[in-house]
Image (cartoon, rainbow, N blue to C red; front, side, top):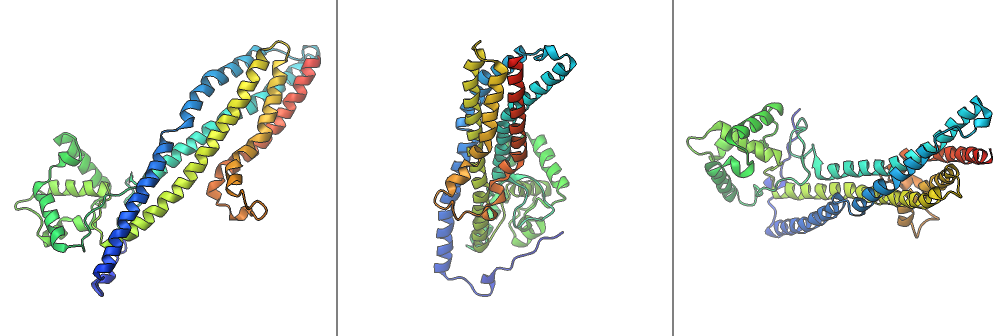
Length: 362
């Protein structure tokens, strides 16, 4: 499949210098905005509070809870014989399900967060390249000197690149590994990795290739540009690409930030419940199974409300007029996926409370 070509309107009506100056100024402003968005993304890439909570949670809470549960293994309804054994199994299952769910949901949030980070920084689609090119690349593309800023200067830049190209400057591999790497990329992408303006026949027409030139070296250089999505765009195309890049980064970043907050809230809520349980479980005056069942009943009753707090905060002044059909599904995908499991955890914890009370009586 071939990509559609864009005809620059300035071929018919050239832009004024004021118009071109406005586009250059816009690109400068956008560079600041894009760098700001990426700094926000870097904060979440570092994990922030999650890096503190995750080791504390798994080191001090999870192992203690599991050891306490294992310490209670035995027939809790020994007087009922086989029926008591079945009730005991149901009791442990009723407590174990919300316990495991309380561990899985924060970890699921971390998984979604890592996936969002990858989507934020990487893409397989770039305007200007063939739709058949599915080679993953960084979402921030290479920026080339616009071809219509000064055709003479652009030709001089390209002439210098092909006369003085040292592939080791861009890809610090050994010579053999460079050739293997680029030849493999070119073969696997069927040459679609080359920017259209950097194909050898076009470069010959421009007169920017040295005499003699080595086709393999030129193709390796062009493949490197394609991997970085360095496309020779006009000023208009560069502005259009920048506008699309800004929209893309905002779309991914807003979901990433909300998911980070939800994941952090899940870790905090689960950690609070876990640490409140631990001293009660270790106190001989309290039946451990009943304490765990009650604690996970409280956890499961509140978990959906807590995970919905970020959206509640967003609508802090418009709760009366809020309509769920206007909420972006991407912003509530996490809670929608875990909702039925959380409701099941409420029922499971209730069963656990009832059975643990019966076991305490017996």
